[in-house]
Image 1 (cartoon, rainbow, N blue to C red):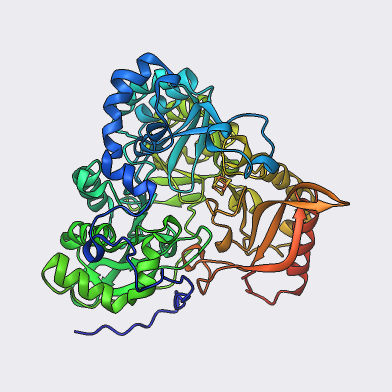
Image 2 (image 1 turned 180 degrees about the vertical axis):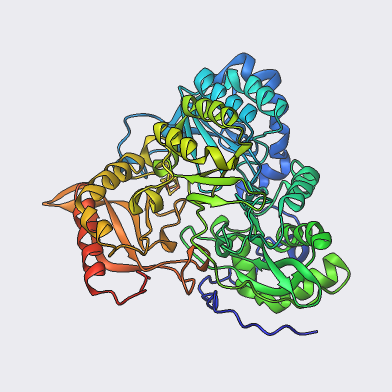
Length: 564
Ligand code: SF4
């Protein structure tokens, strides 16, 4: 049976990513054997990253930071969500000159995965308490629905795990060459217009396969996104695997399979494989795709190892054939593509649920919150009889099950916590990565730069918001280095941190990318933003630059035209 692809929601993927050279071993286990071809592959094979937990609990937390050997500290710790953070006071000009050891502080960033789960008041209070007790009240919501702490000392890690696991949360495989935190629809199970609830599939996969030794030495990280909401709210085009809710004309609701997306320095959009995945098949299909990556992924060079490089060489047809014949043992039906997104997918604002309650999407500024705030939020959710909070793929949050008669008061109380459900266009859409405050790869500061820019733009461009010229949101994404943790290539205005020269002096600034967008954030066509040759702005000039671009856009745009 063939289902015609009538989608206007997605553009063909860019051919972009060049696979590694042929004619030599590229470290594909099923083709070349498992002989390690570089240092990373060697230590991963010698001792699986998951094994480090026992040493953390038995030795390092007791004997202290200096007892941790380098390969555990800079390698295996990631399998449990731990990275050393950047030493304070090292400027961006020295990032490339110093070794990891010289850049590293004696404290850790610790990432807690949420996997699209509902964070109940109890969970929120546990997350908040860990932050205030062990992480100097730090907490960020990441664009992969994680909570990220800073200032964590090794001696406190076992107690943090104990508290998290007591409420069903974990840091297992939150970083490293593993199945990292899943993106799940923040409105799963409650939205009135949902096609299919992805929660059972996510739970079945994470319960069965997180911490599975067979899937914990992948060529690189592996990102998963699953949604059944028609706003396509999990940025499915830039994950290694995505399952996106669709309705098959004969088989009913299920998922469309996308594979091989990823950004970083070689960005590539995912491609549809063309199959319909029923809820019953979803766990096996996910397992098949990640197993293909484990077995056929390129392990010679880490910068050519993501699944997108394999897909660039194979193409979707071969990928499907290998999945069906070698991994599933049966063919999958053809399936339809997702319909165009019904909204921006950030769920900001107040929305009626299918049961008559409301969900409320609110915007912290660039994902920065605190432990104190998490605890207060837990108390507020409980006091109003709401059920839980989910995190979004846009560094925002959604409160679920707010009773209809209490919505207005609840929104006002949220506002009092600094979590507005009616953010300005800039507060709503701006994202920023961790940046130089904590990240060892960073060249420039990001969170505070973005926060200051948002405040400036809210004042300077208030006239455009008031007269309605800015009815199309403009996505402003800010990165602290050439990596793409804040997805610069998919923003209207993407800013890549680097030093720029002004009057012979190097100062923090950004290379500008313009015109990116994803169908999953409401654009007609998915596409990667283009670098504007030679266009760089200093961090100080950022508000001026964005104001000029936005005013020009507002003046020249045709009705209904988006920035992209
Ligand atoms: Fe760090 Fe660069 Fe990622 Fe920002 S984009 S968090 S600076 S690696």
